[in-house]
Image 1 (cartoon, rainbow, N blue to C red):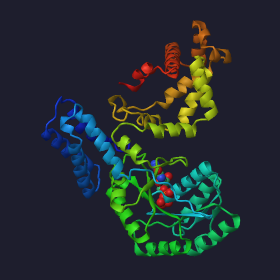
Image 2 (image 1 turned 90 degrees about the vertical axis):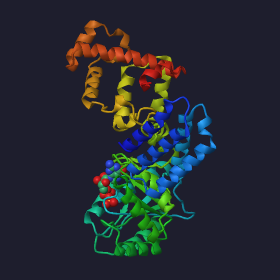
Image 3 (image 1 turned 135 degrees about the vertical axis):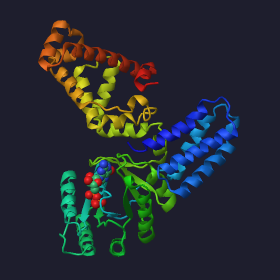
Length: 444
Ligand code: GDP
């Protein structure tokens, strides 16, 4: 999981203050030292760390943390603000050109996720703006790149323009842009070649494409897992190509945090999107404040909610809410919900976006057992339609039949029905605005 070590260390550092009634200057110094080490260990750029600690210290003095009754909370607030600031404060939207098409050029080293991100971005534009993007296959050095782009194009239903590998990328882009004019595509996304390392030949070629296409956005894709190296790459590309933004990929992996926290400060260019998985829908807008609270282990409820909105069927969600209120939630709804939640991605990743959960010891080795989900499903599917709609009629003989039908022990069937009842009560409470039922769920 991304930022795990950093989150843990920051929480430990600040947690020490929580246990003290009154804090002294040396306590604050100690926390600063630990924050500094935590950031360095997370591979954050040295200069960024230095400035960060200096700014936090200054703000802590200004806010009179020592005199405050809640010094730990004050420090959390300041660190949170500073993390947000270092990552750029506000989300920076994608440029849109006044005249069509808006041209987006993707650049980056090989393997950073350029081609994948291009597909994800095209899908996002289609979904959110009903855009009609044209994808241009300009990576002629890695033959598989063209096939890969074509496969992605098919998957997201967007046209791909390619002239194979024998024509120069500049010529491909020229002809691709002509086609886009003709077909009135509102977006053009250009895939370009990557290398294992920055080299001048690659840069010269990218410059030529830039001079021809005048992209509205030159987005650099960097792999978050490569830490400081990602920052160096960003610096190198920016110096030569004047990039307009960065896409940080593979934030679903266990990156330490260095790239996310250093890129903006080192290059002055915003991170615009983050890639959080291999699926075409795994691209999210980068919000510095949300990322800061995720790093601090305070959860990222907003992204979680957005994910839910994106993946949930809205009409169904409204129906579900109504059912919760009326307390008429039944096993059919339960099955539906389970399937919806499964669509959202690995459960343990989702859980960690809930405040307080990221570092909850109970979650340390937490993994939803897919087998267990299959068992629950088998039990529900062994119920008759009437039983699913009216769980109250599930008497012992019906339960025995269900156990036989699903191949699960009777105790398991009983336990599941009991849990279902509890959940139903809790949901009914929550929907009536009574949050007491949530405490057990959030583990605090
Ligand atoms: P390119 O050489 O820069 O075009 O890189 P690709 O788009 O071919 O991506 C390289 C690998 O990284 C592929 O296996 C992708 O599926 C994977 N990848 C890209 N973005 C992400 C991401 O956000 N998360 C994960 N887990 N994998 C990613």
